[in-house]
Length: 200
Image 1 (cartoon, helix red, strand yellow):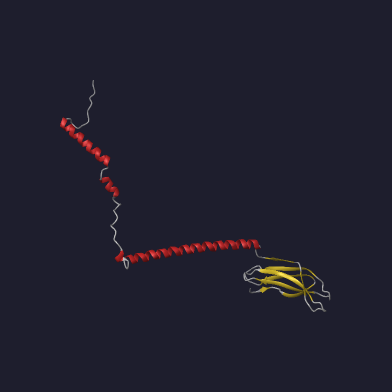
Image 2: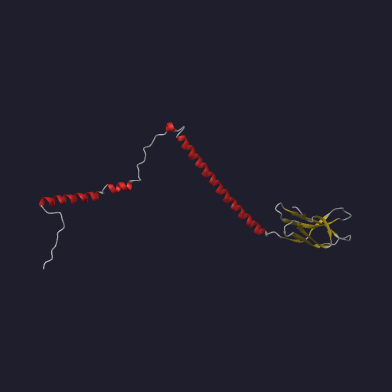
């Protein structure tokens, strides 16, 4: 990371060691990234500061990770380093690990959803290409094998035809009325409504 200041490697300290991780980015960005504090540093048997080894790193995502601190003793007789784990705490300006895991899970769900939408669109496009290709072949290489079908019956003027053609019940009623009219003509009865006169 550009402008990063991270103390790591081997140090000497007595009783306590504290260090911060900062950055020098411009634009008013908070320079603080993290801090680690090593406590209970054992005294050096030979006097002076103790020899410590710090393990810390920055991930590719820009997260500060503190792995631990060890005190290294070098006995003169054995010429062998003795490492002892020390209690240490650290804090960072990043989100809590549980929140990061939750956000990563949501990101995975969104990726799966986007992938499903993309695959669906690809299937639709493939189907449309197949239909268009088949239609072209029906007029080309498949033409000798295609049997023409009779045109479908028109259904647009079905309502008009329905108004022109009398229904069976209407036709039967019309025939019955015409027959009654012929019978009245034979009897000499005028086909008109009866009139009523007021009696004084």
